[in-house]
Length: 473
Image (cartoon, rainbow, N blue to C red; front, side, top):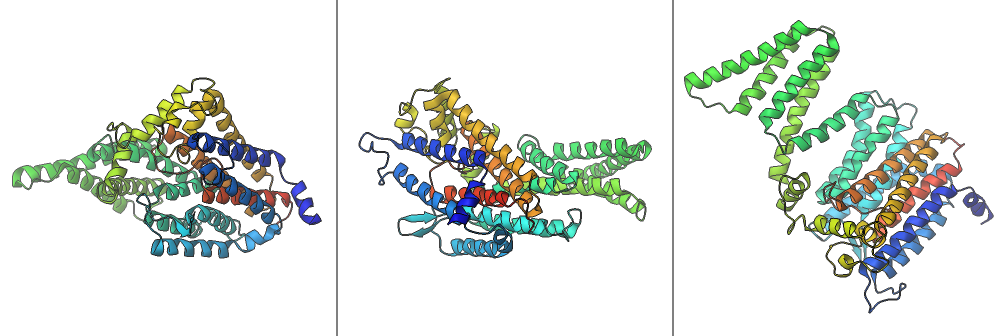
């Protein structure tokens, strides 16, 4: 007992205080979002705010348990915890009931557990363990692939549960990858993928592929100073395209324009690859791979959007990107959320005085859209305070990560900060129309035991590692 008290006394008090403030403010906001005159007592355990209080108490017990365990145990058991987590995801796929279109919860009587929330913790542990090994080399393709597969496995299983929001959180691991020395080209590809995803909804594939090819030629010319070779490549592309057009005209084959453009690009790249085979043409090879990869990726966006996503998911993306408006349908939540937040003004309408909240205009207002309750009742002052606390927590975690002697602890800290950032940015972004509605909770704030427990465990395991930051394991 005295040893545990000694460990607890060394905890980073700034981080712990921010956690307690967020949990407390979240609990009060849940109370406000579902309040009714028949259940005024805040400790009424038949209501959601009463149940959240139970989840909070259990979270505090989990914190005490975390600090009874030696720091090195988390690294040693990381793969075991990861394996158990993957097994639970398989159980979910096999036995879980479908709720709101997703099969993501295991039911134990009246209690529902969402294993995908805890899988984030397991993925952080396994990822940190693998990347922190001395034999791991971030620039080795084999190590990059294996580290990525550790993340792709839970990602794929969660996608199969149709819980897209929880799955997309795994893109957060791009940041700890980059912190550990991943080549900058990967970060470029990450943002290129986001860019291509967005523009594919506004422009035809023909236009996108021509612009991609032109941009590749320009980059090649500026990087290698081989202007004659670049111009020759342009003429080869135009020549092949003209040949296809002539075949179409004279033989009435009716070759689609997209086929002409893609074939011309691939043939041009192939011809120049054959000419430079055996030569040191690193820049050309990388650019060619990026170009072909971008084409395949853009085709896949089109295929997934039209043939895999459900109609409501397609509509949500179109509404978010502004391709169409649907304020009475899929866009209803966001529209009502923005009304609620905007009506709060500078200081808000006052605690329990939110009309949008009281009249249930905003669905899921105590879970995914909890932030609109803050905006309506506490106004700009309240929303600024919440945002400031989250940003302060994330910055503090990064600061603590940088002072770790152990590579495992440092990578764990950056992974935790990245996942918190994605959750925070996307959740608040979707309540104000800056991010698509993908259904992820606001950490420590939204109603729900699984999310609260999972983020509490993730955060306080890191604080336990920080207490022993001078150790290596």
